[in-house]
Length: 112
Length: 112
DNA sequence: CGAATATACCTCGAACTAAAAGGTATAACA
DNA sequence: TGTTATACCTTTTAGTTCGAGGTATATTCG
Image (cartoon, rainbow over all chains, first blue to last red):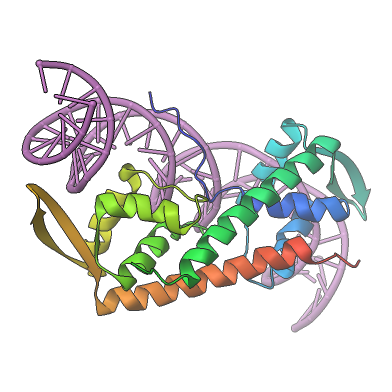
């Protein structure tokens, strides 16, 4: 019945968001730019990725939010919960494991 | 009309296959185990990923194949073409770029 | 003043990848 | 003889991300 695991490479957008929000609270529109900036332009996530991800993370209890009106515009600021911090640790470890695997593959000569 | 780019993280299975086949010709069933081995168990790709990927790569001209019968069993050996080598370079660069981006994000402190 | 751009939120549909399961067939081993 | 290992393959499903679109207010510039 094809009970599928998530693709092994996925979760990077989530990882980046959690990492950024672990350092300071931010709002969605700000995160769009911050992701691009902090990854040195290597990764660019559109609003169509960021907003749904934030909602999912909040629903899962990894983030909490509060609305704040600044100069007539409403912003939704997100920050990490304890659960979110745990999740961040897990995803960071997963990533490092994958990354190490790929690196080994790219650098190791296959000695038959 | 939603002409979507491939997800930015993808192409790792393809990268691993090209990398392995750049070193020596191999057949599908062998690659299933080699991927697991060379990535130090970090990445495991099933046959449902490997075989379709090989076919796609061959169709695109990155791989060429030859059949070889060994002990009553037919194996399809794949090896890189020039095009495949170019593709490997590209994917390896893409990967390093992404990897660097994530690493920076994980390690950089956000100084407001 | 009016128009264009920037800020800020959001959703929906399509595209793409990868996972799992299932299917065939031969050989080896117990 | 039956089970496990080798070796190929496809199809279905699930999951993620992408792009396009939609709303609304503020600012900037001609």
